[in-house]
Length: 582
Image (cartoon, rainbow, N blue to C red; front, side):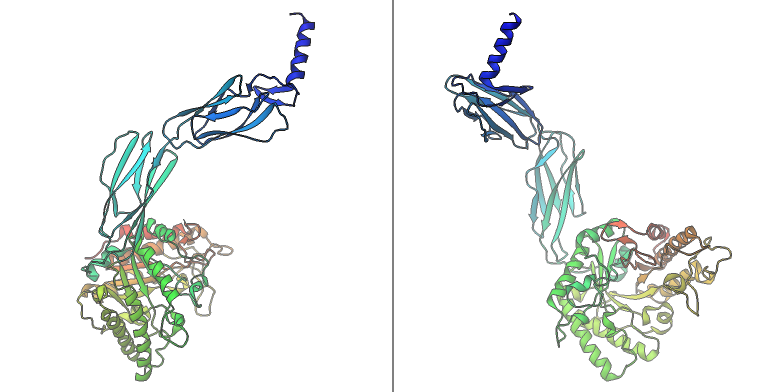
């Protein structure tokens, strides 16, 4: 064909069809020609597992019919200004199957037809048929059905769900898991995570609350299971009315995820300091229902995580804690009536909970004389009697009573008569430890002493006036805790070290040594935990969630991360070094 004829042919073709092309996509203007052969811009398409859409252009002198042999592949007509070239949208859904799949789209007019072959790759990984199971309190087996095209892992996030079947690699698979009976008295939720490479799927298991079994563990048996412990500090005990009191001293609302994270760090128990008196409804001794419900939610977080939980009546505006200046019969009776009202309501709310929940009657009763100790023991007797009277598991629950000011020396010298209990081996004694205060809690220099940054063997800084007195370092901790061992632990009363901690500083001033201070914090936390375990004390670290120095915070609750690694390392090393005495 000569060039003249070729040019003429091309010109005519472009005039008739009005086409320009990019690959084989058709983009057209209306040519006005009445008889045009059917043409389609694509004859084959390949889609990934996620699917998608693509524009298809069809040239025809009349409106064609479009059909697809697969419901997951559809082609719908869009808007076009041309009467001969029409625009369509071909859509492919995501592939939930484990095999590749194909479809054929057919476009026809009265004279001819064309096809588009569509191929889509299979889903990689695994597909779970049922992602949530409800299980009765009695427990039993659940069967998880899934599809997978390769190896995968199935990992329950709690010890009460265990896999009981072995698996073979095949397309259709089942996994059988056993759910143990729930005797905690609260509903609980667990998760089974299925992992294949970077693909993660999960199954949720919701188990109903059961009737809690009889509590059989003694206080001594529980204590050795509870260390180390952690305080949900400055949270449920904060002043303020209503449920927003929870965030009046720190800004993070407690969640199941926070409590689970605490457990993941190795803690076995959580102490929940709590206010009740400040949540009485107006002109009454009735605890606000919304507040009670919120406290119950937080307690349940701990129970679901498998932690032991201590719930107390904390400072609570000092209604009882700061009342020991008046120990007349009338005042003690009035305070006793209020205390009875509080613990009767709290105990009834939690009467079906198992031995993972313990009650502590008070916090730091401001007691330093024999007469005040007499009043203290009366209050603690009211606490014990109120709880026991509610029945259920409260008749056997382990209870915790506080020594004078929860101070070790005062408790050792003054706390010689404990309240009585009609159940044997169900009492613990509580003390706290922030000594020496210059190192642990002092936040500005005073005329009686200066802030101490350095504590423990090998951590002093030559020439600094910020070194702790060596007589209040490791040997002092051991000696103080041994006092509690000989007076209480050796006589059948485990001791809760309900609070301890030391301020960490990140700006020590000119000439000071940050590394030595960090080492001091680690040494203090190690010593407290090691010697507590050696003496049969259950240590609970104080944690305020304040993320600026000075601070006793171990974790950042909002970030679910460790805030002070020195504290956590000290705890872990101390627990590992300690030897439980019984």
